[in-house]
Image 1 (cartoon, one colour):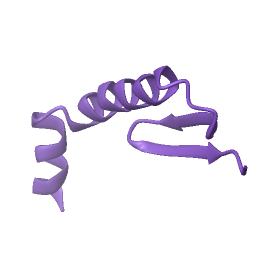
Image 2: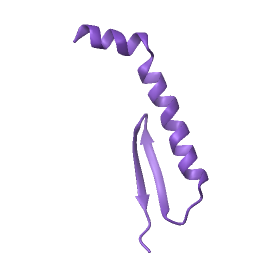
Image 3: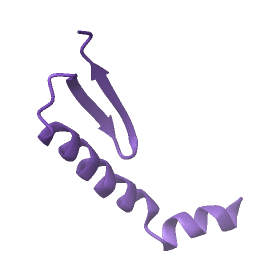
Image 4: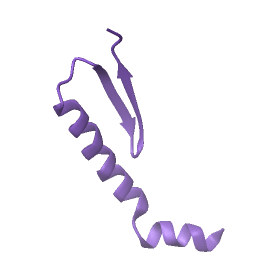
Length: 53
């Protein structure tokens, strides 16, 4: 378990998740699709609310 935590730290996985999460949410918001009501999240944990036709 300690080695796994060290890998997370050494490879900056938390920072990478935060960066990729922002990129993902921005990309979805820029689609400007009528199907997407909202996009929210933190890191790589995201939620997309879909509009029903």
